[in-house]
Image (cartoon, rainbow over all chains, first blue to last red; front, side):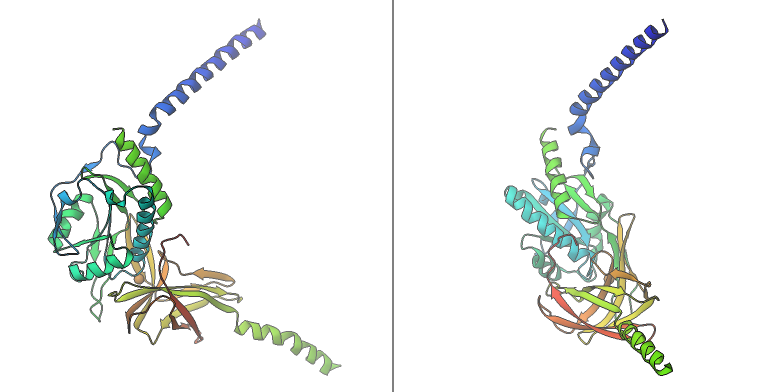
Length: 213
Length: 146
Ligand SMILES: [Cu+2]
């Protein structure tokens, strides 16, 4: 009787485990594309819809929300007097641009460097700077208010440092990379340090995911 | 007999003294090629301290730049900042690598525009008065992981 109870218990336990596993596997398969954990950095189910903003691009033209529509945009905020993090990130983004260019027409992806240093980064300065890394890169700037009209919506922080004796100053700025979808929604935030391969693979996953939603 | 002992002692100590002089190695020094209008560059290198005591790097200078600061980039709460380092200590028998996103030389106001492949002489000054010169190669960033 004792052994019979054990057997009954074992069978019950095994079937419960099997049932549990079955549900687990089923739900894992079912939910896999839906879990935000599956794609690092993705803001799902709450991407942020951007509103109107007005910045000035490196050619001197107004660049606003309409310029983000219909394209995937990678945004990085920095400044041209930044010798370490900014050039390194732009070099990584150049790799990203190249890798994506091989997969599909590069025209549906735009890479944007937003300067938060309105005091020093005018259109001409930005044009020379971004084109050094890639001819297709877009540089954005403008007055502090114009830059704020975009940066504040994305939640980008920056602090202009104190001037040194030679007039130079440092700027603390967000190190993250922001991805805007073709509907103008902030869809993902990638944290530093940046590497091209994970950025490209996450981007592809996010794109595939959104095509199904 | 005494002379012999002294001789042996000298012979055995001499190579140690000699290598102690050269027990700081600096290699893979490079400066990232900057966009044409950049007023600042960043420099990197690896320093090995094979001595039994710590060394302290206090200053770096070059004829080719107006001023050089030792910086460290740090990212905290998603915000990147460059922190001035008054000195950098390299502990006994350790190496320290200056790399993008971490310790770097902040090179202000290049005297002219440098292109990949050029060599720039840097002088490193240590707290004990020792000075070392090293040639840093201008390199174009490729965005690969280091
Ligand atoms: Cu710096």
